[in-house]
Amino acid sequence: MHIKHGLTIGISRLNDQVFLELQAIGKLTHEDYETITPMLESAIAGIEKPKVNILVDARKFEGWELRAAWDDLKLGLKHGNEFQRMAVVGTKVWQKYAAKISSWFIAGDAKYFEDMDSAVDWIKI
Image (cartoon, rainbow, N blue to C red; front, side, top):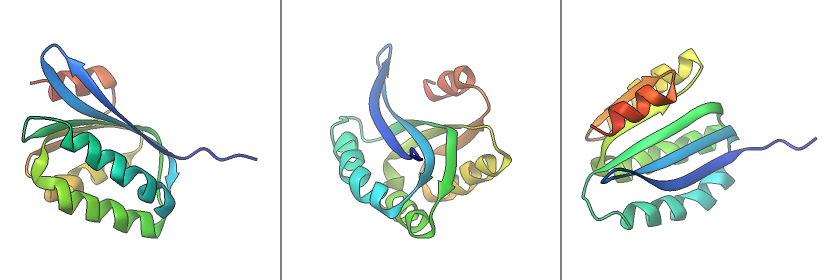
């Protein structure tokens, strides 16, 4: 049986606003972070504005392995000052609390949503 997991990273545009779009799938591992961290850092470096908005689609996200959770925290601490708004779209109660905890590690706001349209509306303000 194959178990799909990982993080898809994209740069999206709404009118004149650019934001990072992440989709987390399955349970993220340390190996996932070894692969995605350079890609995420490259995507952030490619955005001209000093503050970045992020849309996280966590509807298929199952969580982190312990070492991957540490990797995620380190990534947030390293780049947290660059994040203006982070919208997290999920379906699980723990994701709502994870979004609140994330707000402690970024300079901007983090907010949880249960539907994509509301998240997109909030991220583009």
